[in-house]
Length: 223
Image (cartoon, rainbow, N blue to C red):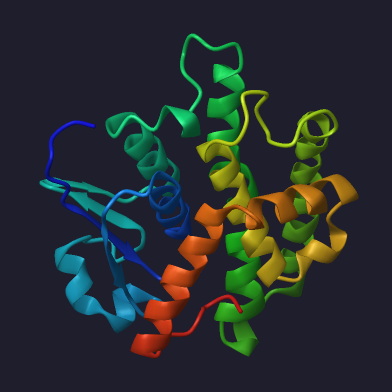
């Protein structure tokens, strides 16, 4: 592990995309400081914009470095702090699969869910769009079928085993559950989601965010 002094701080909202790096930190058991914010922080914690001008989470500080993309933060953490058990290395046969699933979780699975949240929950009633919700529900469930092929023969998405690719996709399943889409999971996807939730690292991440949110009186924006 490079250096002896860790300055990791994660800015996080309950159940937001920032759960990906929170879960990764708990899997790695790295020391870090968790700063919980109300959602949306750009409106309810305006001082946060001095950290991240976008006003979005996650924001990870590592010394002078600030990062804001959840999957990239996970990749940075395992690369920078040498958590090889959570990554697939370039010389391994399933390296390409690993990278694909890592970005699939955010770019393909979480994207349509953000539209479901916005036009099904967050907008005022007069601005909600039933057709958008229906269309992108179908989009999400259609893309979710891609998980069937690897899960037909292995417990995790990559043959090498559990990795941050599973964390990336796992957060999309957490969000799907909050949206009530888990009722449409196939048996293979439902069993995979149960395996992810059974991991001690996932459970520690949940306990950490729930404990701090309770202390601060914060509520989940998606539940």
